[in-house]
Image 1: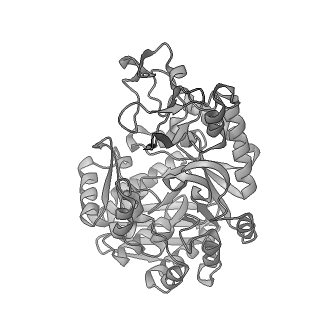
Image 2: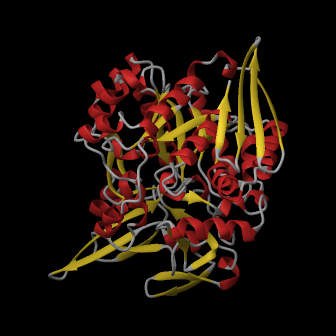
Image 3: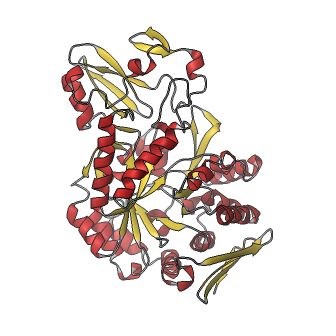
Length: 491
C-alpha cells in the first residue's frame, strides 16, 4: 500500500495512456512504482482538464479498456477521481433536464436554486436572493451568487446551483453555456449515481478513489456550505459504506489550514489524507536551513496515527495556505516571495491572497532549478511516513512552462506545471542524471525491506540537521540530512 505512485494525466507522456504504460515498462522504471494516479481526463469531460465530468466512461481518444488490463497485468494499482459535488452540463442527466424540463426523470438530480432557498429570500430577476443572515457565513468560490440561469423547454429560465464554473456564449441570438452543475445529495437518483460510479471505478482497477470537491456537496440554508457539520461527515460515511463494498480506499481531497485540524478530523474518522503540508515544509527547510517544523509535523503524524499520501509537485499549485498554524505567517510569506521571484504565480480567491493562496510553479523551478535541492527533497519524501506520490514533471526536472500559461489565457496559471511531453522527450529525460537518481531513490523505497508494513520510524535532529531511520525485522534504512550544506546520506 505504501509503495511509490506515479501521477500524470493520461496524455502527459506521448499523448495517450498507451505511451505512459510504455514508459512504466521501461527497464529504468522496473521496481519503481506500485501505483498510478491517472487524472480525470481519462473520463469523458469538457472543462478544467478533466474535472468537469460528462460521464465516467473512458475517453477513448486517451485511454481504452486494454490499457487498464495491461496495468493490472503489470501489478500496477490505480488511483482515480470521483467528483462528488458536480457534473458537467453536458452530462446525460443535465441534458435530459434541458430537453424535458419538469418531465425529466432527473429533475431533482441537480439543485434547483429557487426551490432550495424558498422561504429564505426574495425573488429578484428570476432567482431568489437569500436574506443576508442566511448567507453571511457562506463560502463563495467566485463573485456573485453561485448559480446559472438555465433555459427550459417551455421558454422559462430556471436557476441551478453552480459553485465552480460557468461560461455563457451568445451567437446570433442563440445562447450556449458550459458549466459544472452541483448535485443534489438529497436525491435518491444521486446516490444511485454514486453507487454506479464507485462500482465502475473498482471495475477499472482502482484501489484508491480521490474524492474531489466533497466539502461543497452538503448544503443547507444558513450554513457555510463548505465542510458543513454534520452534513459533510454524514455524506462521507454513506459514500464510504458504498466504497467498502467494492474494496475501495477513499482519499478525501481538501485544502485547509493546519490550525483548523480538518486533516486530523478526517484521519480520526479513518480516512486516508493528503499531506499538503509537506511540499511547503520541505521548501522552507531547504531555503531557510531550518527543519524544526518538519520534525514537528512528523511527530504529529506518528502521535496521531495519520495515514497519508504525500507529494512534492502535483497538477495543482504548491499549497501554502495549509501551513498556517504550523509555521509563522511571516515565514510563509518569505517562501511565497522566493518562489514568485523564481517565476511562480500566486493563486488567490476573490482577489484576497490572505483568504486563499497557492503558488503555481514546478517544484524544480520553485527550488531554483537546483539538482541538489531536488534530490534532497526526493530523498526526504521517500523517508517520510505515508505513500509517496510522484508528479511526472518532477521526475524529469520540469521547468516553469510560461508558453503554456500564455496559451491558456486568464485562468491558465496552473498550466505552468502541466507540460505534455512527447514519448521522445520522456525517453531522452531518462538519460538525465537528476531523473536517474530520483528513480534510484524511489526504487530503494519500494524494494528495501525496512519500509514494509509495520515498520517503526525513529526521528531526531536540531535546527539544520535531522535523521530518519526505519526498522523492520532487523532491516534498517537511515537518512541523514544537512539542510545548510544541502546534502544527504542514506545507509
